[in-house]
Amino acid sequence: MSPSMHVWSTDLHAAPIGCQIDMFAGLDVEVMAKIDFPNCRFFRDSKGNNLCSKDLDGLRNNDWRGFSLDPDPETTTKRLHDHYAADESFRKTDVIFCSHPAANCEIYLPTNKSIIIYSTTRLEFGRDDEHVWWRKKYMGVDKTERWQKWVSNLKQIASSGNNFVLANNLYDASYIEYFTGIRAGYIPSWCGGTLQQLAQIRYTPSREEFVLTPYRLNLMYDAEAIPLYGWPEPGNTSHTDDLSHAIFDDLRQVSGNHLKILTISEAFGKNKKFEDIGDFRRFKGSIFIPYQSSTMFFFELYRACVPILAPSMSLLTKWVESHRVLWEVSYGDPPKLSEKASTMPSPNRFDAVSRRHWMPHYDIYNAEVFPHILHFDSWQEAATIAKNINMKTVSDAMCAHNSLEYLRIEARWKEVFDTIRSHKSY
Image (cartoon, rainbow, N blue to C red; front, top):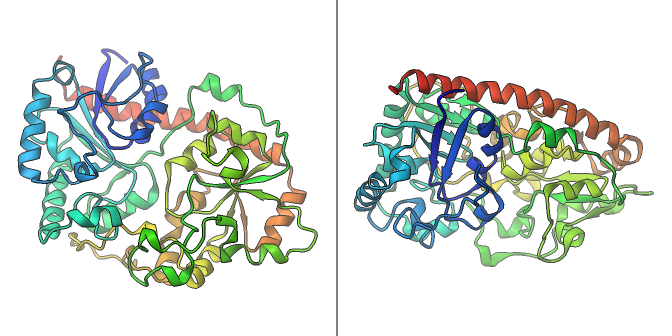
């Protein structure tokens, strides 16, 4: 692609843009990211620099105030807009990339830059997200007004051919349409390095255990500690060992069990430190228990061709009903601002029937985009899979699919940048 393009990000999480850097570089798209979040040090731009922001006057986490541009959004937005307008690197930027939270793209509305909204989690994050316990202290009586203003701005963004409203998962793409009427595009996160790096992957496990993933599971709460509506308080944890949760009771009853499971702490030490996501290939595979509809960790694990065992939709629904898992899927309960009718229940209902309606949009059940995941209806079936399925064959099939996906996803991003370029005067 020529001429090169520059993408700017001040997200408060590094993975949404960081996972795209290798692919964007192949499209002659340079990323300039200033991220104030601890995982910024794990991602490198095309010049080898990490994505950590050194701009003390730019957007900061600021004890979580940055997610809602508090203490005064109007003043903060104007200050940040003026600050970045004077930034030389920002002035040569072509595209603003907003993901975490997507709503903070409101900072950049007055600019003449193209905007890519790349939603990786709930659209109301930072605006009307009352369930998020560490955001509650910033919830004001104007939370609905802030949500309505954000949706109005999103519709303005979507109305321009210079801009794109996208999601990295089917759930958030459908969520955006449900609440706003905007049909978001769907481009999965890559998170897999270059094609050359992908070709070098070899599945050669030295351990027979499966590692419990993702990085966190929210299994420190028993059902009694979780409210019927909302998130549990962080201090109300029931236990610290995920494997002692009641969802594993049936596993302990499996006779002749061939499914040996380790927590990430047991596999890599109490600090959960692993050098690279490929370190999970030292084990036979992973057991993936979703706490969310989509996580960046899932993309990384799948691109690393680590065999994944996951509960079926039927089993996960039973766990929702019996153990109230998946509470973190809902960040809030904002009003629906779309005139489009929907036969779907609200995605922010916590009951098992409503959750089940939305499960086909979860990454682990999206078999077309993520095939070769091994689903089980019971722990007995999981043990049988662990005993009888050749995990190397599974890993090889995942790698072959990832190679094709790289080309497909790259082509989708090329369409995006070509369209933006066609609207730009050089």
